[in-house]
Length: 434
Figure 1 (cartoon, rainbow, N blue to C red):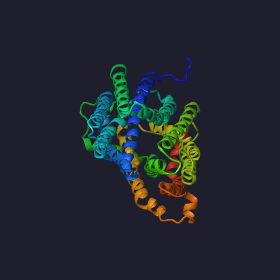
Figure 2: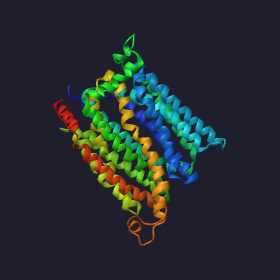
Figure 3: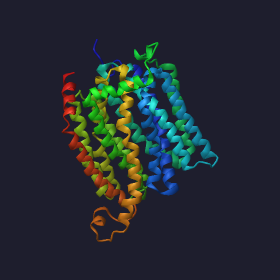
Figure 4: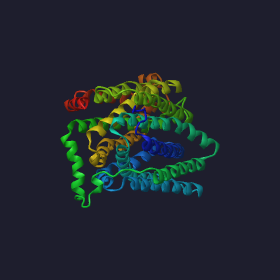
């Protein structure tokens, strides 16, 4: 029997499509709340703290969440986490309707969502491995990149349109409706097999089980060094994300429409890249693809954002910076699923999350502080004829542009350093032999 493009992916497609819809609803809410928060105080640090409060508990609890994920029923874990996310959305809705919504409420609710995600994410990753055949790991990585890019495209467009025409309440309603669809589909239509670890009657002690995730990475230095490389990239990327709203919402030529346009073109680039990643065969070296695509991304987008002074240039930078990212994500996903045993994936993915993503809240915090306290004040005291003004312009938002030029150099340096890591290239040889 000839295998088709989507051979063996029926249950995965059902889960993936409905979860992507729910992600779209959550992303629209987050996008609208970032605009709402910046309008309250006009501070890059204030909006950056939304992400800090989300990622900090996620990173801290990820060390232990993998053990919980490996032991608990994957389906029930995902249902419980989705329900908690819906509760936080309802809380925002109630506070907004009564006129009591404050920024600190959003910080607290984001922290709750971060704790929930620390358990849900490894459970979801293992569920995907259990629902799809190994031969399709390249394909599912591309499909996941496809849905992420589609969400990135639609989020600013839909959120801006709905916010303008119907207000925040309509966005929150759509978020809850998308949750209901995903919840009912998972509860009624999806059956996730158990792993052998989940079938043990006398599980090993909690801390001993958690240490096995560390030991696996210690024994697989190529994967560990690749994770540390991506942690460095995430630090740079999160500083970028923290500075982006401040630059595009306040710089001459920028606005909420500019922010939406750049976000939309980011999504279009990842959309095209994810389709290509889904259709192309597996490369000879996944690690080479990961390093080279990130190097290309760092060589382009930050420079366009730094020196560009109009929406078309910023959008072009977004396209060049994000077009190759799906190739990185797809090959990283396939590499990890291939090298990590399914029964260990929850623990290893959770340790990966802690190591790879702990730099994200640091980056958001550093980015917000750098824009508000260093680069914006620096640009405000420059004379009209100074070199910095000639390069980046005048007015609010140019400090963020100056920061992007520094991020570009840091990103290129990080990629070049890790391209010389011998353990990563040993992993390349193992990957090529599989």
